[in-house]
Image 1 (spheres, rainbow, N blue to C red):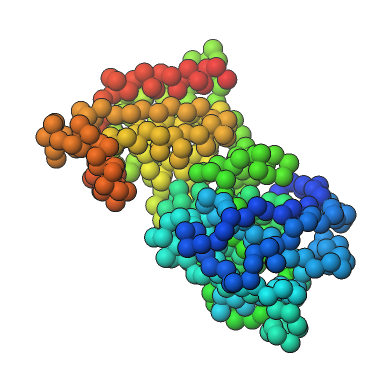
Image 2: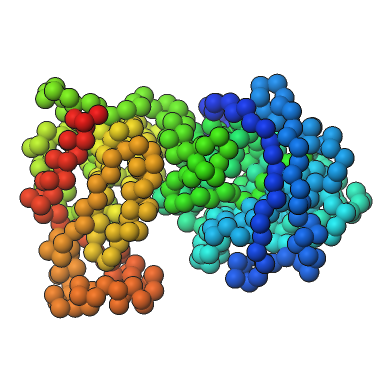
Length: 457
């Protein structure tokens, strides 16, 4: 796929199922905007520019979509609706005359009330390290047409402005920070939406092209390099975030869930298997187990021994890991061919999104009081996609930390003391400098349980 300074061309076309929704905009409850949330708003009171009444539901256009033309016909001034109170993301929705000049990171909207604020359109507002890699956007009102730059490109398609900065390139963060929030935010438009993306890299767009083109039928705009003024009738700035690697159906229109995301991902990558192998009474079937082999940190040092144990119980075993240069489409097909996946806690487990339903995810959790974190990051999301989940916490004997510290060290006796030193200390000890040697005798019961799950389906 060619890369242009202004446009990144989409090539595949994957259509999402049409949603027949009435578009209702409601006011958001706001808390005071202070330095604690890391965003600044002009001295103009928020209440002067927040829309505090709902727009009547617009009539659907042909094909069941809601047209911005209906909203434009409403003569009342449509003021921005922003949610600064969410714990993870700031999202502002604008209607009317909106003008975007990407190169200067500026968004202007017509309003009779003066307002101006800055925001970083990335759902990690509480993480200064992530936000340091995200370009700040200035959102400002204008009262007269002459006060704003003239439109060079206009259209009726709505737009979503977001950043792929932060921890781009880490599969877990790619999905939990960008792709799942983008699915939540854009799915309502049924592909009729344009993405204006800041802080992008060509390889990242190419890697996730099947997902991006499945959500938008239009060219992606490289926000930082775009030097024309683009005008839109409807713009969402920022991405809606619910929870790590998952979706809260109660917060979506029509109960959109991780099951829907899983189906969408399988369609986007043309993955064939919707459900895992059902063993039943057929003992000749061999379910396929994928072991994610980490090579840098939290390495499973006796992966060959674990693979032999799994084969001895009746699994067909595949050992693999996807790197930055791995063809994601090919790797997604490999994952989808499996009935279970296991690995030590880490970003590689994010590939569970390509598994069929009713499969089993086995997460091996290192020492360091990481059990709850591991469950939140991967366990609950896997269950939200109707997968079985098994969590295996290793013992001290299964950790390579016993080769670095005496048995009476704080690292073993009081992990809380390490945790209290902050994330950097905790990460250094338990995530960056700890490998795993699984006790295959102890682990055998986990593998047997995974087989039992396949017989129950």
